Length: 108
Image 1 (cartoon, helix red, strand yellow):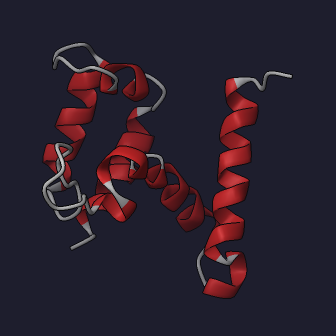
Image 2 (cartoon, rainbow, N blue to C red; image 1 turned 135 degrees about the horizontal axis):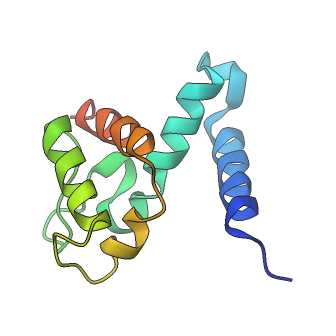
């Protein structure tokens, strides 16, 4: 059985909510959704955007929000070359890119 993209996103969000402790952590549903979106970056860029030192992937945590937004939009729009980021970025709206960028920029 293959999940649709929408069903897959919902499953990832649900898993992230459970992993984060849900309401017990005092976070709102919107906070958890943003955290789950940002968690998709962890496979390559490290948990909460904190890359493993010495790895090829850059750390995203603490970078300026406007810089992150510009880079994600450039990947999405095909203006910045990439191996996989251009494909991943196509799945995000401007609002999601803004939210992910703000979340990662706030991490130190």
